[in-house]
Length: 174
Image 1 (spheres, helix red, strand yellow):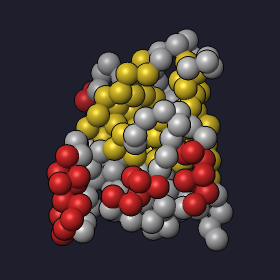
Image 2 (tube, rainbow, N blue to C red):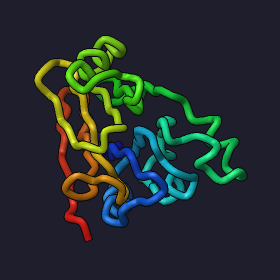
Image 3 (spheres, rainbow, N blue to C red):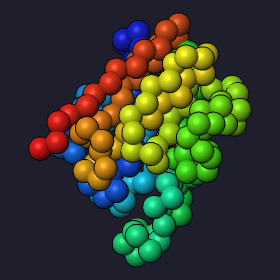
Image 4 (cartoon, rainbow, N blue to C red):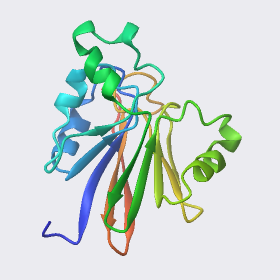
């Protein structure tokens, strides 16, 4: 990469419907990470980052009963967690449905991924950027049209060897 940092699109909770503005944003990124509740394979195909295929984890709604039968092999191949090596640290990815009650969720995630620089999770559909501690906990909100709580959203992680920065993108409901 010629730049000093990578642009990583972080999204979650599409539930089979991807907001076109978010798809456009992902196209300008080097990588894309989907934190679960994808909905079907066409969502992953619609996400076209510049460098690599989309990295994704399975959410609690990513189950055979909710995916087309022809896509069950892809669904089965999705991991429950990922840890991605980026410039400057590790990005951990999990859906978040097993992280417990809201009040303790971030502490549990930090304990689960102690070597991460940041953790991205989905499930709640609520955009959160908790950068209060050395391990950031990020929820990009819903990138589709279901329960967006203020509009479809995603995060752009600018990951450099020395510095990470998070950009929030939230679009108004159409």
